[in-house]
Amino acid sequence: MKLNRKWLNEEFVDLSNVSDKEFVETLTVFGQKVETWERLDAEIKNVVVGKVLSMVRHPNSDHMWICQVDVGGDAPVQIVTGAQNVHEGDLVPAALHNSWLPGGVHITKGKLRGEVSGGMLCSFAELGLTQNDLPGVFADGIWILNDEDCTIGEDINLVIGNDDTVVDFEITNNRPDCYSIIGLAREAAAAFGKPMRHHEPVVHGSDAGDIYDHLDVDVPATKLCNRYTSRMVANVKIAPSPKWLRRRLRANGVRPINNIVDITNYVMLEYGQPMHAFDYRYVSSGKIVVREAEDGETLTTLDGNVRNLKAGMLVIADENKPIGLAGIMGGENSEIKDDTAMVVFESANFDGTSIRQTALALGMRTEASGKFEKRLDPMMTVPAVQRACELVEMLGCGDVLNGTIDVINYVPEEKTLPLEPEKINRLLGTWRLDGCTLYVTLEPCPMCAGAILNARVSRVYFGARDREMGACGGGMNLFMEDFPHPPALVGGVLEEECAQVLREFFRGLREK
Image (tube, rainbow, N blue to C red):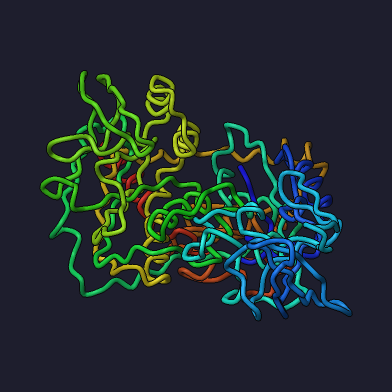
């Protein structure tokens, strides 16, 4: 699992004053083993923004130009180029004498057909970028920076967004909660004792209609699909994602494609919840069916390969055909295209064993399948799809329809962990829990509040509020009294989801 530190600092927990070495060593000691870490700017050295002051024809060439380039120094640098898309006044990437480019390319001063060249003007490909990183930029020739927010002499790494460190963690199978930026942010906040910023997605909706007027979801494969959550977006405008989103994807090893696809990949990185987007016009009869495949069915997946399906493999289908391999890859027959106008967002929770077996049988293990294999939390499907819709509204790329289709086939049973004070005290060498954080589904009652105060728990996070017996503000607030060592309180975390878990639990007790 990759984590770029800039995203962490900007959105979740500010550790900008912590060195890369300290960061990786502390997280490793804390239990999150770091495999590798690298600076994104390590391969590009001594490349700056330059301004072309003048251009004259090379006397010994019919296609080369001799350019005087202002690179922010005391005097212009002469650079010879054969590019035909450069003009006087253009801002360009200039690789100076003793500079380095991706792939170990070393640029030094030399002569081209008898004329001194103090470096090289660069294309975006020579800087390790692709058309997906820079949509709308002329692909051939030198990368013209006139529309970029940059200044003469500025390090090109800052323009690209390479001023970042990417840390690659080896996440163990028992920690699926850490297969996300948010999960690793929690670990980092705890390890360094820093507050973490929590964001609850807010979706405003629109007057474009209601999802129930367009889509029906049927899940006959109840044992293989724990939860299936859908939302829809109308009046979609397919376009490149903004620069900040593309940079975050690229830093985490994901190639930007377009705003809708990028949103699904962004949410998967952020929340650890794989998502998929279908072009609604290819969903026959407006119905999604989560079922097992039949022997002999085929599906051409997004990578262009025809997959021969076997009975038992879980597929996402419409009334007539499979349109995706559940938890692995979507089908080519429902792909998001430039003229897509209506989108179905899928945020689901599938059986990990089934996904692993299908991926192995078809030889197509993906980022999504790798996450599902670890048995993700089914409670994450709703926050993830809400985040996707929030991003749609934030980027202005469509109108979110009202309503959410949410089919739940499995709710995790509440587990009771016995409190063993003697054992805890023996391990800790004290009866106190200073510096510890308590996470609970329901707001603590007065007796629990007394125990928390007595043990000196430092922080308490709780989900659903108890309006009758809650002692943290629901029915009363004992922590407002003048007791010593009151904890920091954070309430209402995933409140509705926690409330639903509790409702299902007590409903099950009543039915026994």
